[in-house]
Length: 222
Image (cartoon, rainbow, N blue to C red; front, top):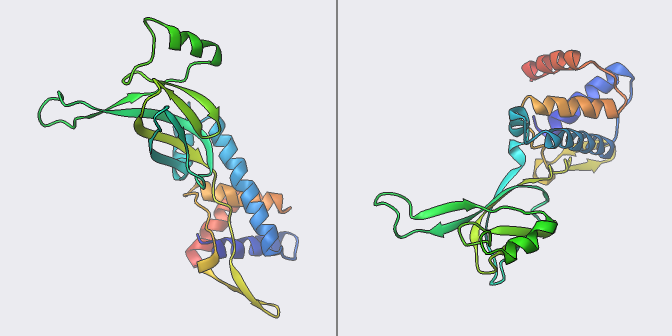
């Protein structure tokens, strides 16, 4: 559903339930609040729930990185970084068996702060290129050890895009503009739940079952 279709549906439900309409800004705010509520719910159970992984799949980002010579990496601006999922390093192995990709991936581990110094000074657990460790300096900012140039992949969750209803207005007539709009990124059936929550935030008290039934009928008529 486009944000135009979502706005039309919200207007229809609002008119039926309590009369009146909400401004585009009010509907944008309600949809963004609902989107972030859903995101936070699934993020908390992401590690243990297949459904959470499915729900948040539009917000998973793969970022290929190269550190500087000190092993430091900062995610580029505009990534809307929220939560780190995993990090690995890629090592070129020229001795890889013929026919296999010579690039091999190794996971990066994140020891606790009180373990970091021990790992760096350890004779048996000191980090290596194929068994690196990392310190979280700040949000999206890491220092990998050993402090050399590393290359690999970071996977993380980004913030859902804030919905924007782009339009032009002449008098009281509002004309939807898809080119200046930002659509919701959720897939079915999770988008329906976001719309349901947005309606609740706008003061429309409908049961989820009823909403799904009405929404199905609404879409079939489009």
